[in-house]
Image (cartoon, rainbow over all chains, first blue to last red; front, side, top):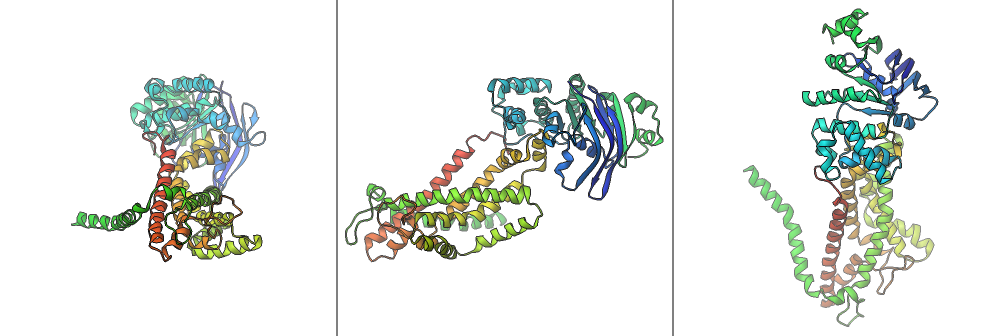
Length: 252
Length: 271
């Protein structure tokens, strides 16, 4: 089951660049939340702060509080533990190139020490079914490399890989921006199905996409959260002039 | 015109290798028989005999050298690429490796002679293995570093994003992805030290008799070739040619074998 995310006064810096300023918001459980905004507005940095991926960059610094399911992820647990509970799907599909489809999906469990064959078989099948890839690959799970799939299939493979470790939250950083329209539609269908079981946060450049998949939408601009409300409200009756300008295409 | 030049250049590159190989087979193959692989060298003045002790000796030396050079080299390469980016220590390590790569092999031999042979008061297979192992380190380290740097950043992020500890991600994902290139680097280093003679002259020394002990002097193919090629007997010259052929064959076979074993599991379509 998904859990809610509570963010209080989150600030982030890359070097001296203050990329996120006083972000406070509540992301409810088992919903899809979209984050929109122009390039460089801080939305990608924000999702990276939710699973401490920003720490892979040595010049990044963060203050503030992020609680996932009540747990303070900065003070009460480790980065490794956080990332097991919060899966991430990246902008460009990044399957492990030397691994088969099966090994890609099983990698998260295997690298954390699980060895039981039957459990792994079950998890791989369940995850690939959840990501709507099972029927396309079930006959060559162990024969074909993950990198030999098409771009859209690779991205669904990456989603399966993230789901296999049974996270509570799924972060998606522009998951469809490198894909064609048909593959994009499949990813959006998936988000629709997955949000009953997981809390989903999706960063997108595509406002129609936000409107289609998300219950709530946040608008970021210059490192600040300008507005956060129901998607319907944001797109029909935004409370802030800047939000209105952005969604009507006057800038960005 | 351009393609003609390219073909010419290709021929110029391949020709020396083919010429050496043909010459070796022509002069060495006639002396290759079962005795060559099973017998010790014959006493001076007698015909026959073989290089069994040198073949085994080379195998012992190269195994020890790889056991030292490969892990240290790979670990240093991992440090340079994954942990030490931009630090002072990594610059020092990288510079040292490049200098070490350029140190003449006989100087390496002298150093190990002073550090191991003199204090132990004995030439030994161990000292020979150590000097060859040290000579492997810079090549292995630098190729490992370069191969790891070619692994896309997104692959590292994928592993970390799954909640995999950093050390595990480095070994099981980054290093594994770069493995074919890393193995090529190890094979290059291996092939290079397999033919080294100078550093063995005053470390492993050579030995006319059976020995597999690491504490005793040991024979090696390049040493045996060196002694026989300079010898006064036609029989010795023939054996030296045969020894050279076996040495080249040994290198080609072990390199191909490692390649075969390590690429067998690779899937179609993998990078």
